[in-house]
Length: 114
Image (cartoon, rainbow, N blue to C red; front, side, top):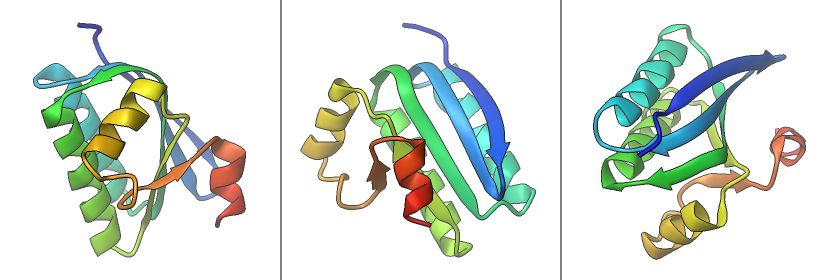
């Protein structure tokens, strides 16, 4: 298991969280929940999770993604996933979540859809 590192950058009104490591039960999903909660608390309306360097997502990680999506949707915000590794993409497909999340190939495509 690889510890999750969450780095934030902002471009205009978009907050981009660059994730690196595993989004799993314990420290990984707590770090993600904390970062998303902080952005919501700051009133951010547009968030992108860059998952390019995510190695593994377990069921609790999926739960955090869904919770973040719901929280931003309830506030009228935008919650996008970009750069999904093949393994994560396949997991979301199996869970039938690709139709729930706004999944973009990269940051440029995410911005184009705004």
